[in-house]
Length: 198
Image (cartoon, rainbow, N blue to C red; front, side):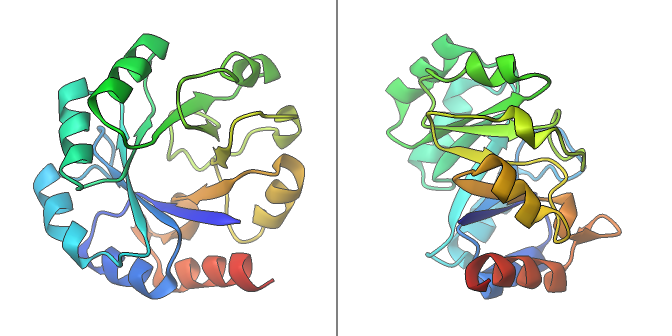
């Protein structure tokens, strides 16, 4: 089971994930309380363990900005959380060879069905706009042809249930590994330990 810790925004967060060794981390470039400037991501990238894949999170961002961050190796994957359609995704894929994740705001099973043949390399199934800390009904997932990240309100006390119900490629946590709005080293270490060794 792959693990993504999203929404790193303090220098110490890099130290936390370097110790815990999740598979992916997320830098949020979209408007959010966890939004980071490009300059910070550029400064942190060399400090990130080479075993961890950095993902950039965007909402309706310009194609050139995303492609530049990917092609300059500041991030290795782009996660699209806005209204980016298939034309946008295909155009981005002409500008970079890096993988694309398309987020789906799951309200019904139809939302997932509609994206089964997306040009994106991965899907991300979430409750809403991202970072809300709320779950959705995992029984709606059903059979998904494309590998997907499961997000939305995941934390230590529900993650095993979520994995059994949805069978994702990866789990994506943000608020579930925070205390008082900041990443919590103990929570990150605990969730990675659970996923790796239980």
